[in-house]
Amino acid sequence: MDQLKNSFKIAQIIARNLTGDEDAALKKELENWIGQSADRKSLVEQITDQKSLRTELSELEQMDTESALLNVKKRIQEAGTTLAVKNTPYLWYRIAAAAAILCIVGFSFLYYSARHAPVQISDFTKQDIEPGGNKAYLILASGKRLSLNDAVNGQLAKEAGVEITKTADGQLVYKIQEAVSTTLLSNTIETPKGGQYQVLLPDGSHVWLNSASKLIYPVSFSKKSVREVQLSGEAYFEITKDKAHPFIVKSLGQEVEVLGTHFNINSYQDEPGVKTTLLEGSVKIQQRSGRMVVLKPGQQALGSSEGINVTTADVETSVAWKNGDFVFKQESLGSLMRQISRWYNVEVSYADESSKAVVLSGYISRSRKISSVLERIQSTGKVKFRLEGRNILILPQT
Amino acid sequence: MDSYTQFSDFELVALLRNSDERAFDLLFRRFYPSLCFFARRFVSVEGMAEEVVQDSLFKLWQRRKDFENYNAVKAFLYISTKNACRDGVDQEQRKLNRDNQWYLQQEIMEQDAEDHMIKAEVLMEISKVINQLPEQCRRVMKMSYEQGMSGKEIAEIMGVSVSTVNNQKARGLSLMRKSLSVENLSLAVFLLSIADTFGKNFLRN
Image (tube, rainbow over all chains, first blue to last red):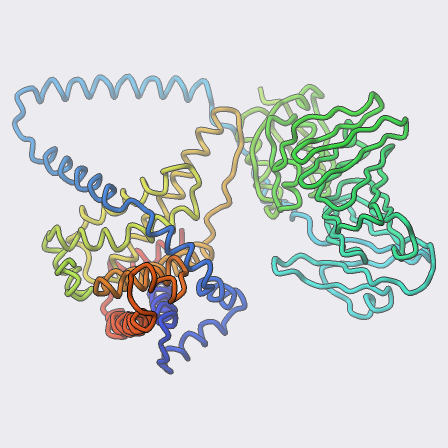
């Protein structure tokens, strides 16, 4: 209770501050409270931000308090009269009727439970697996391989001519300094299974690299007529506009050419084709075979050896990984497990291959341990998991 | 203006205990918007936040005899709203599971709940004191705080001089400061067992 009480008090002090209050003792108290964690500082900044305060106050203003009050008063009255009912002539009929309904409900419940026996959830938490994190390797043109882990190593960064910074939401960003040399050499950033990373290219373009992916980029962009990178795996790109220097992403048998836009490319070897999803701007996709399409925002191209198929994209699903979520809409278990395997660095095998075709929908944060994800999928009653070390065996649910 | 605004928070709770409906109305009007704001942070289904909050306020009336002080009322409202949001989410989840979907709302994290509550409380305090201002003053503060209008714009709309607007603003702020007096804060000392129980639940859930 003390904490709750304290929160109320803090809210009152913040409100007073907003009215320009100068009470020194209260100010000190608020400062002490803020001083206890960095999160509190940003919370108070967020609350007192004039613009959001305005929006939120008008959100409050727009609520229909009066009709809500009427609703509740009606309920109070009804509750009052129901309690006051005594000696109703047909009371016995009513009790009998209620009992009958209870019986029916009860039986159907039993029937339902028997048919849908509760799913046995194995306890995955005993040998849980942590989610992936910010992990990547930088491979220099010289062949030297450096680890870019959560722990920032200042010296390492300096040597390699990069800057590693932390964004407001705790993501590590690897910023490549524009090299002064005229070299045409390339560096590589590679994420392992269970890793992800953000890269800021020298032209200001921002790349989010998903697990088990690789981005090859030139040490210097400035001497080239096009900005060209190579991708394997999955990445989300926010490309800085530069009409004079088109940006080209080469991946698995195709080239995507853009001027300045936001898009996602999923080009894992084990996926059925290369998926390019466009969020903003426009991109041109050209396959090695010569086939070419131009995408509009909100469209997705699935490129395979049979050509390029353009459909309306589910943008939320396509870039969920970048926002820290898994989002599946009518997706096959096979596809879903491939994503889980990359993020949790686990191997997946099937007792019965036909399980791969089970279709599921749902979403869950990527920051959760594997137990939460497996339990959630298992709760649909469609499949069962057996987790041993880093191996998941999928059993059909009988 | 409602004459009940003259009562202190402590007196309002005493009136509520005595089944005074006007005290309930006032508390309802005061907390409904900020509780809805709070609930909307946890549930996204249209209309569900409002339903949950109305339920909490209904329960407040049913249990009106139990509250010894203002903080206990607030604690009850926020805790039962938060718990109902979580249960509502569970229900949605069960429904989805039956439809062969799996789904997990981000769990309601204790820290988030506390942050949202502080925010909702700040908004409640501010709008409470704005609404207690005298008519002209209130209009000026609303236009300035909620619509972000400049002194000049407000003067034009109200047909008064800019200096009148500025005076009203200064007066409004000073009245608001007074309403948000430290006296209210010192009431936090009166805490009884019921509030403690809620507090523990709040922290545990």
